[in-house]
Amino acid sequence: MLQTMTLDEKLTTSNKALDLLDAGDREGFSRLIRTVPMPPYLAKVMKEKMGVDFLLEGGWNLSEVEAEFGPNWLSA
Image (cartoon, rainbow, N blue to C red):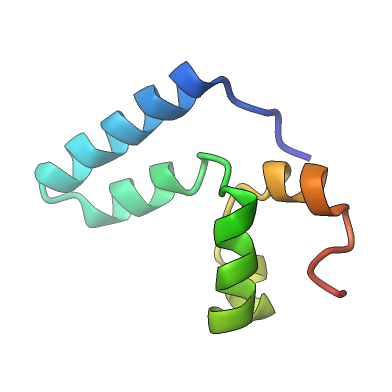
């Protein structure tokens, strides 16, 4: 399980990712933004709309989702 991030760490990482996007580095943006924990409400919507494989194969940080919904939330 990935470590949780403080709000400050989330904001700092998100801003660094946006700087990469502004510089034209879409791959760097995508790689870095996926290290920020996905909010549980967003993961729930993504699971319903995009499917389980999207979340499993996407390399998303799901630590906050697992903390809220449990480790087996994707198979439920």
